Amino acid sequence: MVSCSTFHQVVSEGRDLDLTASPFGFMICAMLDHASLPLQLYHKAKSLLWDPREIDLSQDQQDWTRLSERERALIADLSAYFIGGEEAVTSHLTPLLIAFQREAKLAEEMFLTTQLFEESKHVEWFDRWFAAFTNGEPPRVESAAYHMLFDQELPAVLGRLLNDSSAEAQVTAIATYHIVIEGVLAETGYHGYSRALRSNNLMPGTVRGVELVQRDEARHIAFGIYTLSRLCQAKPSLWDTLMTRLNHLLPLALAIVGDIFAPYGEDIPFGLNPADFIEYASAQFDHRLAALERALG
Ligand SMILES: [Fe+2]
Ligand SMILES: [Fe+2]
Image 1: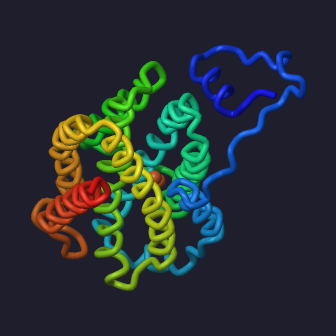
Image 2 (image 1 turned 30 degrees about the horizontal axis):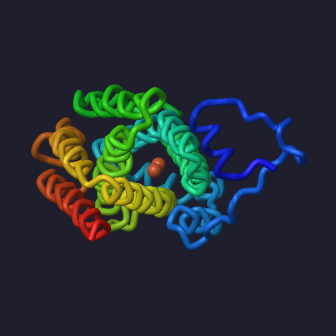
């Protein structure tokens, strides 16, 4: 019989498994550790399923017609930043799953299947939103910092994992994806919907959809913090790699937050203040750092 450890070693070395050497031709692996964080998050994802198609946008349609042109433009701009981001994270997550597969980290792979499914649903949600409110056409995102992050930085660090799944490469990828994009930028974006719409009792379906996206993202961020702390505990010098990456990306993230408001000059719709959002994003960054430090003990 082929043991689980033999199977993992053979797969990690890229060799073909010779099942003819086994009298039974199958393997027995260890029981799943359901108390592990990746599997706790996996089970939570199963219990919190939602369908973007089931969100009622009828009140939102009425509210939309009552918004000013500038208010509609700001909500559409914010949603454009989101749909582009969600498309990018959906497209570029798979190399991380492959990196865990090489290490036979099945629980991590199982969690990431839920994350990939959820990122896909987030794309679907924003696609549905644009179909409902702008005839399916998101406005173009003009921010150079946004395109640097999503078109260059993210594909580069996730793509690296296809050829280099070292712990250093994993830290760099997860810092970019789970900490800066999900833990700082997306969180600041939800705050934007909350201040513009929820605080004004507007577009309840949009508010609900964004809250459900945020609930999914909380699990993704938790997985990122767990994995980074696991990697840094195993090799403490990776903390410097992590800090270097985070400090490299923080100015880019803050520039993106500022760029959302740039077209609106001094008179931002809904009375929003860009400085509040820069401060909010910086606070989110500090929260993630504190969570990482706590996880490392
Ligand atoms: Fe997402
Ligand atoms: Fe996510």
